[in-house]
Image (cartoon, rainbow, N blue to C red; front, side, top):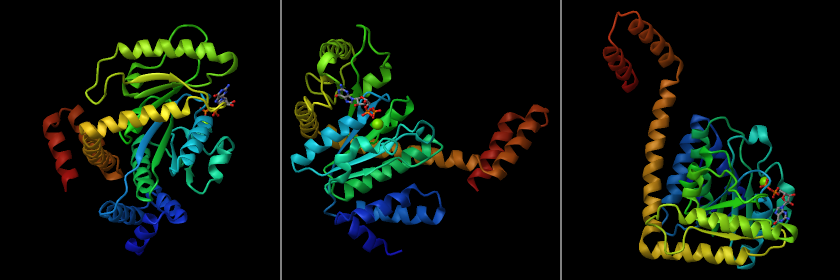
Length: 326
Ligand SMILES: Nc1nc2c(ncn2[C@@H]2O[C@H](COP(=O)(O)OP(=O)(O)O)[C@@H](O)[C@H]2O)c(=O)[nH]1
Ligand SMILES: [Mg+2]
């Protein structure tokens, strides 16, 4: 494979090359992996490498993520920005809640030449999902998209993962029936930069306003983060259907990001994320090694020896680790 030529086409924004590249990083084959690593390296080392705003978006099924991405994406296109949308959904194989499942909701956006929508691949384990998604984000960024939206369904661990690969995290909620918070986990509240209460239209407008006030109150109770200016994180209402509040949401996002850039937090966060993923990859690589057939057999043998009192746990562990290091 001619990696340099491939990288060049992606840098020129060639969509077919981008799609091929994402398929390459999603592949589990060792030779594909080698090419993928070389490609990402070639793109990252380019002096004219563009920088996108990477936006994470999470919300439980039905809150209106797809509808929001469509309206919000169209608005960004109107501003002359190029938009890429990626889905991270470890459960997509089962739930059908992924972008692929409801592509119709992004009909308009998917037909736009300045937009790119990539459904989530079928996958089995979160570690692999993280690497592939992260690589896909990097590829979209290298292809010159101004905004890369990474969508995830609210299933716990995936939000943290998406927050670790994005510059800004949006939590989309629907208006609550009562006045209680919608059981949103504290951990998710803590990573959100902007809470958007969607469906603030028609009969849902006043419940949306109440829900928004509840969350604004809850956000004020969280510990202040150094990477936030005064007033952030923030809660606001939007309507993806009526396309209201979207411009304000974008303004809030740019205000926050401009401030973070100025204060050095933007670059610092990316640097910290790179370090995080480096560690994760090493850890996952070691765990994968431990999961190999030979290693599993040896674990079993040594485990039995330890249980039978023939060996101390300390010695057995030393022996196992020595094998892995070979
Ligand atoms: N009233 C109202 N309904 C909305 C809005 N956004 C989405 N919906 C509806 O909520 C349902 C789920 O939307 P969808 O975008 O598929 O949600 P997702 O599962 O989070 O991707 C659909 O019936 C949408 O028409 C909104 O702003 N207002
Ligand atoms: Mg959807």
